[in-house]
Length: 255
Image 1 (cartoon, helix red, strand yellow):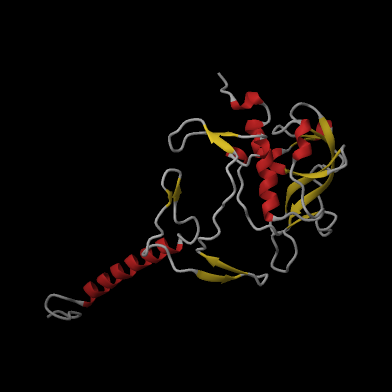
Image 2 (tube, rainbow, N blue to C red; image 1 turned 120 degrees about the horizontal axis):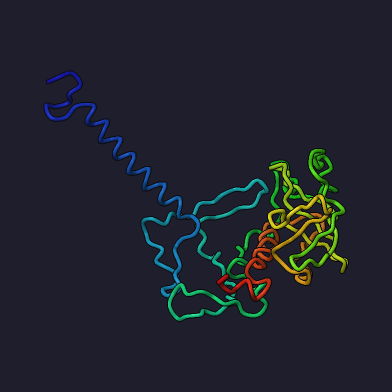
């Protein structure tokens, strides 16, 4: 037998190769189980919740979070049970939905959002990740940028609804996340920067997503100096809904 051979038909290199194949197959199996901790079992419109299975759905694992809370995954009791504020336009599965009631608040289509934790996201030292400059005093608008505080806010129908009261920053990313708009009605609402177009020459910020009268229904924050994860999604979803539902014409084809 040659050096390294175990028998005349098996050598060390062959054993190592087979061991690697077994390890790699086990790794793939482990990863495929782990990626099913959230989003499974699948749920279809016509068949409902699918079989949880006995092989690929992992056993629940307990995760200890930095704030002391405990999360278990998978957790099959945490399904979204909100009623669907929409009707199907056709009977087949996957058919488009038409919102019922106010489409801006129906939470369907571009206005849909997940029920995330109703608590602010925290930094490693326990501070809120998203905070206004009046709270995050160690941040400031860069001198090279335009300071938006005091600018008018104009809706897509050219209605001036208020002024920028403050800027909310992301402490972890060192970037602006929201403009706080003081409406003429006296309420303060958040405007995600992704839906705002700053026009320095006209000293205004234009919002193409919604009409002036629709600013009154922008979801409010429970705390005037903080925003929860769920509130963030609700606010962004409201402006996103406006891109399709703000006017009846937006739901129609261009041609």
